[in-house]
Length: 571
Image (tube, rainbow, N blue to C red; front, side, top):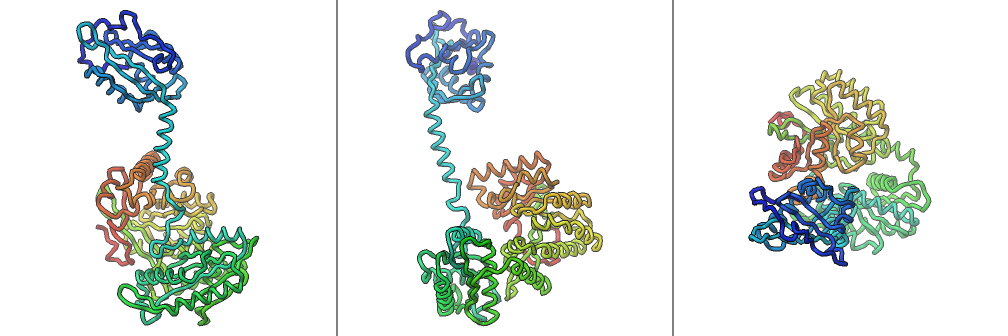
């Protein structure tokens, strides 16, 4: 431990120290562990009890500054120096708690009482400290604090409820369905709800969401206490009838459709009647069909009901896997052939130049009323059934066309994990770049980190080849999916997109700030640029700039909008 201030005069002797009279040992460890500091020689001596705590006694040539650096925990050295200074200058006892480091590298907590040693002339000539080991107390205090932080930062559920309806999300509903499959038999039902044609309003998304919210309240009034509801699609509600007989499942399905069709729905600006259809699929324990497969079968069943103009389609046994895959590939092909997919773009701001330098291309699915819907459900099912490659290829080709028309644009193109691991993708990208005469430097391919890549070797081959061509590679949704940090080593990533979950409440959440700062530092060490998603206000943007993020994206910068030439110019 060191003198608190070089300006304090150093007397030649210590009262009670230079005379050899050290504090007497007692039977308690608290009194037995002590040290004395002599300012005259900048020396420190301590008791055998303190030496046992530390693992050894100080050597004769060890001066106080070396002792401070060696035995006081580095994070507490400022605390120790401040306490010594206060004791020295105030001449009043000072209590503090800090950590001491043993010679084996371990550390322990101590309470320290510091008293100035006053000479006969009334001048402070040193400091005496009495030490008490309080490791058990401090360990308990830290554990209480840790548990409190965990309670504040851990979500109460694995998945947040759907914000529009308050129901389980599709993922949460699928988890519950899997549990029901393990426990026994039952049925799953998917109800399609939409306004009648007189009030369709061209599929306005907010009106559909409000209708679905109110439809959920109607169904909550007629389901059994043990039944579960979930939002499984933009206009679909799933009902889990665990343990229900086939006859009961049929009656419940008819009741649900009848209740929805008969109910007048009063929305904020209009009242509507609803059209409803349902598909019911029975499941039994021990089968090979998983929850997502059952949902696909139930969704296909309500479509059959609508096509046949009947309220309900019953599926007594899950559809064979080959038939399910074939029907979905037909649906994807039909959607591609009839332009049921469209592209939106969202601008990305460079925080160094404060200019829009990139645009991310976002896929949207058009519903029956040509209203744009999120593609998450479609892409998830298509990936599971190995039908996503054609969708990704459609997006890539439209991006090439756009890049050829606007040579000053940098475009970011999302690819599914399954397609990145498909050996056909590399050849198709090379072909399209040559066909449309595109400058590869305009293109950044985003691998969705939440998707598990099917073939890592093929994916690495694709990554190396597109970078050889001059394209860049980005990792999307970083921190929310599979093997994030491993991907930084496996793939030659140029850009990492920090998942918006850690950004949306950044200014209010210190834990998110710590996480984002750490992610940025990791990426900087690897030579990787960072993009923060879900930026919704100026304070968040300023904080991200302070944390070292390179680019930002979100509603504050610009909302996704349909692809139009006028919307894609640099700003």
